[in-house]
Image 1 (cartoon, helix red, strand yellow):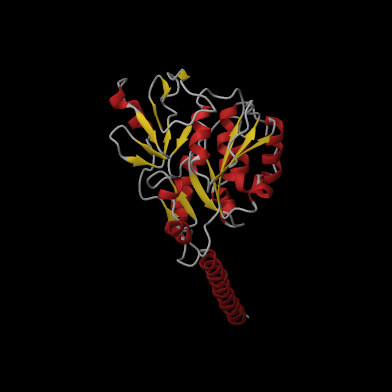
Image 2: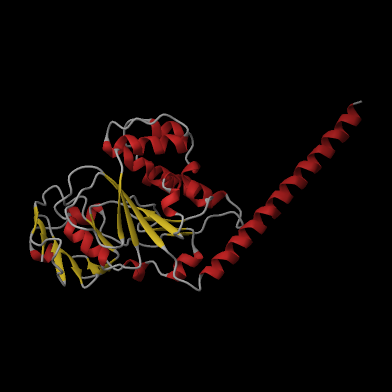
Length: 311
C-alpha cells in the first residue's frame, strides 16, 4: 500500500513539474509575442500621456507649467480634478473635471475596497493604479506616467527616446527608484497592475493617510520582482540616473540668481547649467510667492528660485 502511494505521489510530482514547465513555455511565448508587437511599433513614435490629479485653487506657477507643456507637443498631459483656469489650456493638456468623491469611487472600483479620502496627500498612493482607473482615457497611448503639478517640463523626448521605450516596460526619473513625479509605464494589462506587487495593496490604499506606496514600497517590491523572476517574466526597467533636481539638491540652493533653476527654449537646467528632464520644485514652493508672466506670454527663458518664477 505504501509503495503504491509513493508511486502516486511521484507521478503527481512529475505532472506538477510538467505543468510548471508548460506554464513557463506559454509565458515565454506570450512575452515573445509582446516583444514582436513592440518591434512593429518602433516604426512610429510611441505615444506618451502624463497623468496628474489636482484639487484646489490653480497654483500661481501654472502659466509656466502650461508653457513648458506646450513646448512638448508630442507628449499629452491629462489632469483630473477641479483645476479651473479662465484660459484654454495648451492643445496637449486635457483637463478632466472630477470630484474627490468621484476619484475615490474609481479607486474603490479597481481595488474592490471602500476608499474614503480624508487627506488629499492620500491620493498620491493611488498613482500606480491610474493605468486601470483611467484606462478608457489612456487607451490610445503606448505609455502613461504618473506625475505632479509642481513641475516645469524640459525636453521630455530628449531623455525618453523611442529607443529607450522600445526596450523597457518602466522608466523612472530617479536612480534605482520609482518616482512619484515621473514613473512611465507601458500601457499593457500586465504592467498596469504593477501595484499588485505590493502585499495587501487593497488594505493599504484604504488607510486614510499617505504611505508613500507610489515611491518607497512599490520600489522595494519591484526590486524583489527583478531579483526573483526568470528572464522571460521579468519587467524591463530603465532607471540609471537622476533626471531632475531631487529634494536634497533643492534644500542646498541659496537665494541668489546663481542658485536658480532655468527653463530655456524648451529645455530645463539645474543651477550648474546641466540639462535635466524637468524641474520638480516641491521643496522650494513653500517660500515661492509669485510669477511675473501670464498665460498669454511666450518667454524664451525663465528661472525658478526660492521666491518665485521670473522671466
